[in-house]
Image (cartoon, rainbow, N blue to C red; front, side):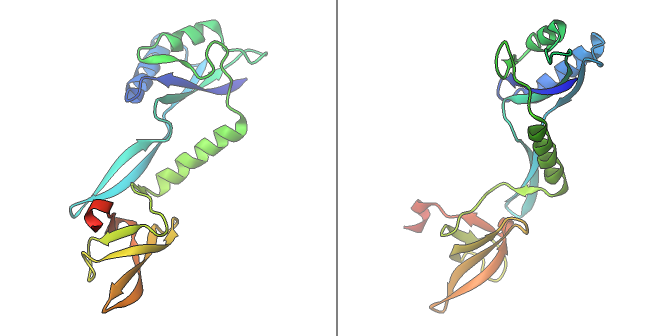
Amino acid sequence: MRQWYFIHTYSGHENKVVESLNARIRDMELGELITEVLLPKETVVEMRGNKRIESSRMFYPGYVLVEIECDEKGKIPDNVFHVIKSTPKVTGFLGGKSPTPLTQAEVDQIVHNIEIATEKPKPKFSYEIGEVVRIKSGPFASFTGKVEEINEEKTTLKVSITIFGRSTPYELNFLDVEKVTFAEEE
């Protein structure tokens, strides 16, 4: 029976752990026992200057997911447990000496989140209603306004800006605004 487990890694070394683990699986011919090694990531987008920059961010920093073929009782084979635990930069299984497998619902949710992240990159920043933002481009560049509505699906904001003394709602993309710090407002 195959089950998924989280293994804890040194922070910032997740990619290296995935490479090392895949090499050990290949070299020790454990492909039938450790069936998959997964590092859930999402692509995030931000604007730096006038450039659109995409980078990847991990869903679970410091963790890697592994799918293991367990025995009838759901126990991880000893050799597999030790191969994973002795992999450089791995501190152990989530749950310690008796790791708890993820439920099917948890695995489905993680896979679903990966699929969504693959289809549509997420803005690096999140906004809140009432937050003050500065418009970075377009006819109202350098104007500031308050966030009135947030549409996560379309990655747009409705911002209330003051034009000729009147408050006017204006719809903008997440990437067209930047957060205003309190020091800038004063």
